[in-house]
Image (cartoon, rainbow, N blue to C red; front, side):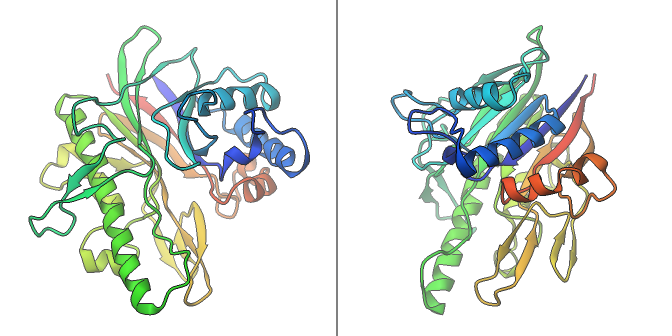
Length: 332
């Protein structure tokens, strides 16, 4: 069985809706929706994780999945995709997903044991000093189960948008250093929490997919050298349990003068002012899932791909991230 899966940070998708949760069909929001619609049509995903989706209110009068489905009815009416969401985020950027119900069933299946829910505080030793500190996911990762249409188990899925490393306040260098270290440890804690859940699934013999905007890459910077770890490598797993290591669907990134290749986004260095290419959007899969044709839909890199290059303007303007897409084959 083959499935085409993707993850896409759509950049404040809540802005594309009115306060009543209806798609905004005027002005620049309408133009961006048309751009996104062209990208969705070209991707034709069987399953896509959405980062920075529309808001879910605590009273459920407005949900991310309901707004996504309303958006599809307006902008991609031929699409069979259905929406699903999880715990509401304290903020305004939700995690949600779209899937093809003719090919699979998708269920929101969070762990509910005390202290194990992703919307509850948790303890984690991020500094290897045998001291656990309390953390909480700002956006609770979305835990899903993918089943075949005949209810056969396919995989668990965790969609995440982990703590940003960005510092957006005016600070002096001492404060910059303090906040950078604090934010990095919180990022590690969130990924350690997600990795613990992956281990629980893998120990049961279940396959796992982790996808999302992790706000980190592989061996990228000073702080990862300082702490001897990166958030993505935490998610990949422990080399002492090689059978539990997750695999990226993308090729190993290479460093050049502009940053990293492949890259899914870019940011401006606050000190130098340079734009740096980064690979912070990921799809990681367990070893029972065979990933093929993984690529970032980056028109600067995929110039030989007629579909991606033909969407250059849409991909550049619709979001500040590029989607990651691959095919997975379930081993028998």
